[in-house]
Amino acid sequence: MTAARAADREIDHATGRASGPTIDLAAHEHTYRRFIEISKVGAITCFNILALLILFGFGSGFWATFFGVVMLFATLIAATIGIASGSEGWKPPMVVFAIHIVLIILFVA
Image 1 (tube, rainbow, N blue to C red):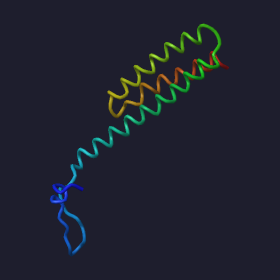
Image 2 (spheres, rainbow, N blue to C red):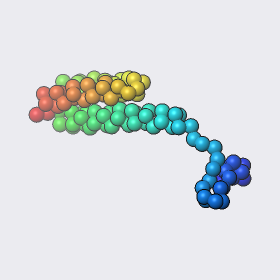
Image 3 (spheres, one colour):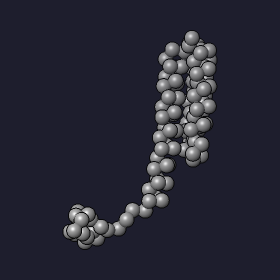
Image 4 (cartoon, one colour):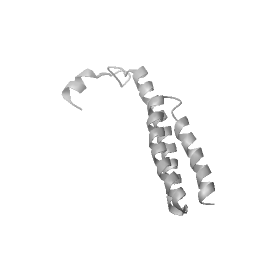
């Protein structure tokens, strides 16, 4: 801890607790909410990439590859829209994931 930082914090010797500048709770909660929202989008995007790997690895024919490339771009666009959307940002990547599942059923099964 730097000397300037240590000077900001005073210790109440009766209770043993440090007192000092308080955190900005509203900013902390906003940052936490955004972290959770981006984590949701990121997790669903990872599932989309796994579905792409299944489509590319086990799909057969030109159309599996074609739709795989199209869905790759759809995944990137949906992730970008999802991050920018806020609390409802998980929906665009989830729609793309549902389409991935349909394509896997059509071209892999």
